[in-house]
Length: 549
Image (cartoon, rainbow, N blue to C red; front, side, top):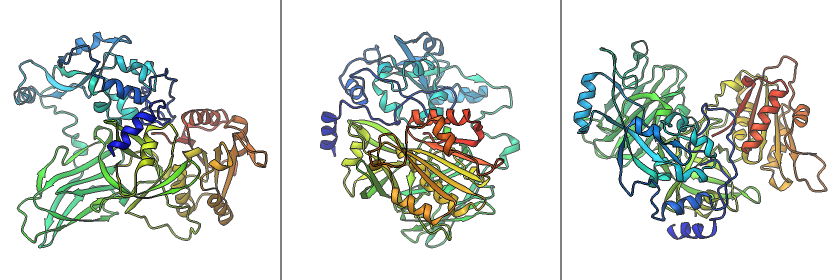
């Protein structure tokens, strides 16, 4: 594996990955449904070039290897392009005076400050940032956590900027009024009774962890369980929050994990099989984050290693990867959501989002398909100068790759309340449409029309063309329209790029007052232009969902 990465280092240095995994380290001030645009980088400013620079031994902080304590006043002075410091995870704590004094003693600080985040000198990274210098400057001299979380909280800034680390942020604790507790530690009293809780029970052979979510309509897609090497992690997704049970188990258990869900009352059972039939005195030692109910954006991404079991050619440059989840993992990726793949390339963690698909398009919609809880399928385009996808393509059957928990803001209810579903896909922007098509045609009876408008360069680039054409013949509600930007002389279909004119021809309501949902996914310029064209045609923001990561 190390040899393979070294070969990549030699041969792929010219190309910056044509992907969005690192398109911005810090992004727009509000998380938009519109994809972010890259800016042209100067020659010699690719991801591989940045990795080389960080390994060159050059002093990128200007501090000659020292780490310092940075106050808010000091941070604010470094707010120019030629001198730009940014803090991440540096929000001040709100606590009572007693709590603050206790924390200071615990942390063994000599100064009246609390360590709260990391400060980086991003000046040398400016020219390497795919989102442009202006995006980084939005956080210059300040805490950039919110900007980072809103756009790409999954980027491993600790790895990317490790040679730019100035030191830790020191912020004076803000004394809260008497009786006020930290907001992140305790929920408001009105909502405390609604927060989840857990308990555990045992028999001679089983351990049963019961989570009371106090939420109706709980389902398998909202429950994520990982049990590996005596470590148990169970996360329950509840809108924009999540509840976590995470412990180092008291004794060993077998790899198999069962999950039972009482959907109507919101009770989740995680069942483990004891390796030895002995009585447990305790469930285990709690890990950081155990028994917490917080916003999902405040919880770090969790990865598990999945085995590559097959790799099938879809087109000349796109392959279908089949990954097998670990035995102790329960994970069902919801429709319209994505996961992140993580690889170590030349010693640096690189992460990229992908939307899981089905192994094929089912043509029999008599009943909802059974979920495959063991495998995950990813349709991935291999770029000739793409660091990440080339490394993926080098993986051999039996190799492992790290896969994250699902993320995304798409909700099935958006489809369930619509009468017309219109899908605009550019290239591999087709991937979120696969599960969406399956769900719409299988489980949403109120839909009158489902139309896919699929943009590609050539006929050879069209993914699953024959399956889509068969699906259109099978279900009268479904229609597919292929549009090529570089067609051959023999092409008799539509041609062109996404435009207001083309969309006005194909994007139409089945009736004047039909409730419509338009989903769009593709390269950033395709998505941005498409959303604007749709708005120009009179469609509201509520009728448009852009898949971005």
